[in-house]
Length: 189
View 1 (tube, rainbow, N blue to C red):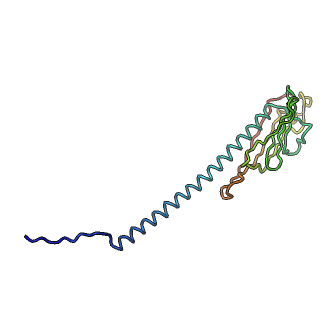
View 2 (cartoon, helix red, strand yellow):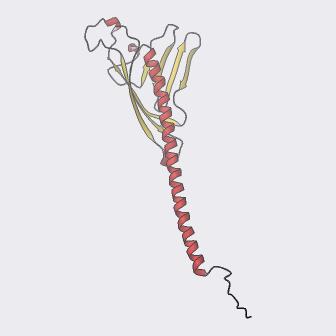
View 3 (cartoon, rainbow, N blue to C red):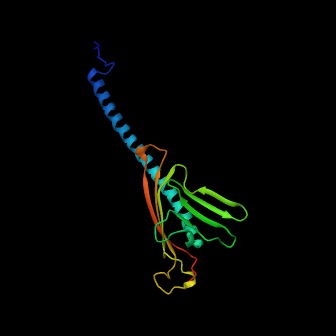
């Protein structure tokens, strides 16, 4: 009985190694590209969502005050857009005003017992680019004294609020413009 020697391969050929490395390189480039794009998209989404949440909070705070309080027409010029709004003191003597100083919205409450307390409505990483209050009607009509239907309407405030992220990579900065119209619940006509 004669035994034949079988030739057994003990490794890869040079061509097989080069092809495997090429396939692995292409797969690595594609996978890393997909990962980087997904990461960038995530950063854009997170920053935009943060901006929307902060904008919603600021709008809701301003809307709540406008609905519950009476506008102080003596402190503003309602014929023009305003970067602040002030309200007449409530039954406890608390006077509220909101002022945009160019980058922040200052919310201040002055009470007879504690004096003036002030805080920013926006977070430190959010910049208020623009804030405008448009007050309708543009003249106070206490208790319906003026029969003119243009003046004798429910007080409304239109708010334009423009925000942007700050203190982040400029590639991920976003801007958002919010607008709403609010009717005051204080109606003395």
